[in-house]
Image 1 (cartoon, rainbow, N blue to C red):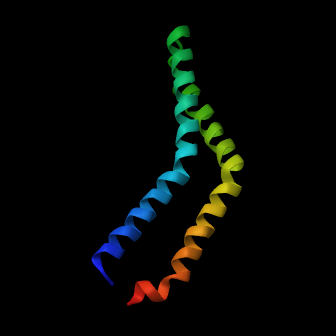
Image 2 (cartoon, rainbow, N blue to C red):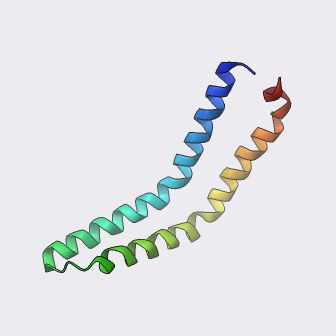
Length: 89
């Protein structure tokens, strides 16, 4: 297997992981910012107030994005298995 093929496969794998994780991370970031601003304005410094809404937001984003995430993973896996003979050379 050529070095360029290995680098391309690694790059595609990392980009797929980043693409799949981005909506979940964005949901956690947005909710964390909103809760942080709320805590600053009201002077409430409760740690569970910050973590519970973020967990719920990430869970909801996971449920909403799951069909797209599965399609993306199946597409990438099909690409890998479809070109396995090329990669094995």
